[in-house]
Image (cartoon, rainbow, N blue to C red; front, side, top):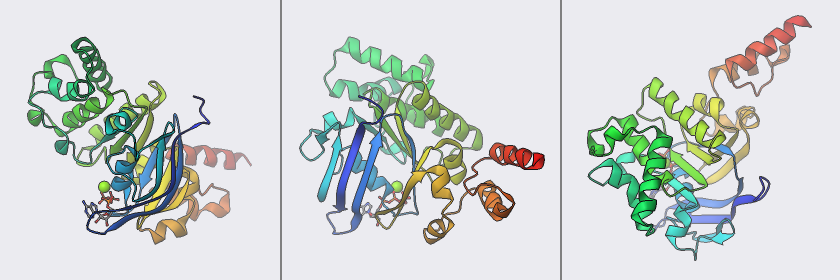
Length: 279
Ligand SMILES: Nc1ncnc2c1ncn2[C@@H]1O[C@H](COP(=O)(O)OP(=O)(O)OP(=O)(O)O)[C@@H](O)[C@H]1O
Ligand SMILES: [Mg+2]
């Protein structure tokens, strides 16, 4: 499969919960292998619901979700989750085994791999997330939030999905843990070839790591483009109660001097400053 073949294709997706809440309306998007996407938007805008539609946990009320051309409506969930893994907003909602090994082995056992293959998958996933052997027998409950998050990610990686969606990877983590987890997701994307989708409220993290931003509000996609493009639309951001990082706001306020409104980092700002000084 080449990079330009859509891996996920969503056409006219609507989703309503059984109580009638319309959570998604007319979602259209295409996701290619190798992307690093941030899904952003206010509380209740539909980010989690969309993610659960992408991995087949929820079936469309109307429209369709195609993953590698498989329609989520009639594809068994095990086939879907082997392609698109979803790490829950709160890892504690997904951890239910008595030790880390069984937790990570759960998915591979569920798809009936042999114990030899299960062992291979668990060791591989634990290695990728940097979970050392001494934690294998530990109860996930006794680990730090950062480590529980890693066990949750490892349990999804053990199914070797092409796409991994992590719902709020940095919430509740201190800044060192946040950087660690983001650098780890960056490595999964760049070194291990995974397509990564993060859901986050932290615009600094978005500017630093995501190459594409999908902005949602009230169940609809309001903007979809490169991070610089979406952050250069102050009117849409304002309408959706989001603010780009301070450095982007600063660049936008001195745009008249020649700074790009899509400036994302201090380094980018500095190099423009150096170039402007030479003029
Ligand atoms: N199980 C449910 N039953 C009924 N309505 C729900 C359910 N889960 C979510 N909703 C509603 O669906 C809409 C989208 O919710 P969703 O959880 O997808 O938003 P979100 O963008 O992930 O929000 P947050 O940033 O708070 O996690 C909201 O109106 C929410 O109240
Ligand atoms: Mg959510």
